[in-house]
Length: 620
Picture (cartoon, rainbow, N blue to C red):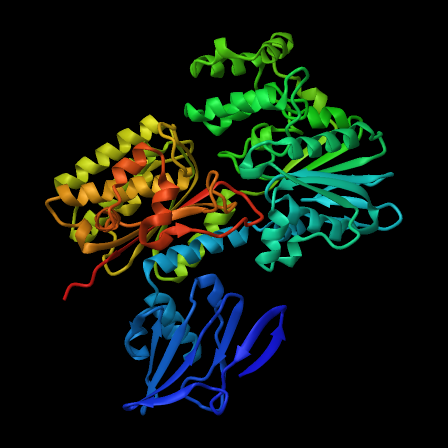
């Protein structure tokens, strides 16, 4: 077995001979290798003297081990993750396989098509997250031009670097953004401060993502805080340092601000006399009563020195350029990370309305009452932000578009439902369950019949009640008509749901969504007459692109219609778990945690991603 470095990735080549694990079993010769994380594989197929290169990154696809067999005629068979592939010639019914010029490429495509739906869903999630890694996005968006009179070019906009170039940042993706920015800015960067999640440097080191780490002797100070995405004294320390840097700038300075999801928790600077503990207690009460992220951020802005445009105002008269990785539906500048460099479109009256909506107006700390009573009644005028330029460089749509391309390459009919899925998690689960039921009915035969019409009507009514932005459900439902059973279907979506806490368990919105869909599909199968759900293989995945779902180590979870019955066999009651909001405990115990999606902190954040895969079962 030979080792070589190529393009900073580790490759190994398995050649026929003494380095291979070769044995004869009947009339088959077995060549075995194990593909581990971070490895790509070169291997021989029919020609024992030539090693053909596999073009696909097995790590990305979630393939962990393969066994290849050849018979005396050179026909190839493989086993992947315990699932047998038939002879290659039988697998190459897909045009993609047939068009591949080399046998090695065809075999890899065969492996792709033979992977389980769970493996496909995982590979699509990884593909989506990989697309919105911070460094590539920032390098596409920004460059420094010229030496004598340098200019910072950001998406065709030029900003002269007159004197000092400074950098601040906050958010889950900012570490990688800052590393890329310092590489671009070089010696022109005077100083920087970034506030990032606790433990993220260790996490990216463990994952081998060295490109996301700052170089030794960096000019950028890194402060870690906001454990479990909650403001804490360390996050406050970082916010104060950023505040002091901004206050010292002049008209000849340029401040580059890097912003991503999670930035709000990492920029806590309550307006005196409010204490951090008082502000966070109020935020937790709102979240526990089902407040949406947009509502939480409106309240946070009203009580903060730096949010709601406060950072931009402190940096005046310096030029402020903000590069933003959006984690909010619709990409509103004043909501992402609570809009520290954007004019707020909300006033103290909006804050008071939210507090009234959730019955908290009459239980506020005295300090909060003092600040709200002295705040301006109307939003700050836009003219106050003429020195600011805010630019979105990445979003959920970018991630879903890339996942769609990969799904289509795997042979799926692929549709993007929406990048703005929002609302109470139980109602969103119902929406997804009914969509799945409709696809399965379509696979059953020509037309969906009266049941299909009923499901469509229910879907349209539910979508209207959820008021999901930019969701054209009638058009989407029309695209589902006439699906061919021989082609599997992939539905992709993004956004953020909300969970109204009723219990004391541990979980996150993605895990709760997956568990509720598992329960919903179980109930639908028990009640259906047509049996369409039982004739389809179904997998659902929901995960946070930041790698963290609530105060847990998981990013999300998988589910299938079989989950409830299988859980009962282990003594786990899904309904009882959901009534206690204890989805993480359930998934940790169920089948040894096999259904948990655990990625570690990913270094990026563009909200959540959902993957629905449906494949008609082959009838014998």
